[in-house]
Image (cartoon, rainbow, N blue to C red; front, top):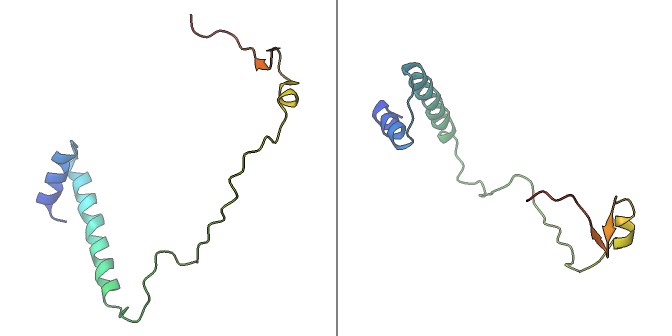
Length: 93
């Protein structure tokens, strides 16, 4: 990344970076570019493309409607109920 590109990104993202911050960012991207150059030296033409290193399987459960708890059991510990509903303090006046 060049300094003029960083200046454009700074304006686009409405940032005000100090010179020290700019130097740090440019050094970071320079290091990443060196790493990419190292990686590009490897021959990967015989390597199969993949998204994940490990195989991923999605376990999908049946979408079945059920009522695992009875309302009465859930409301047994409630301070106050009325006709199957929880009574709570009024919060809006």
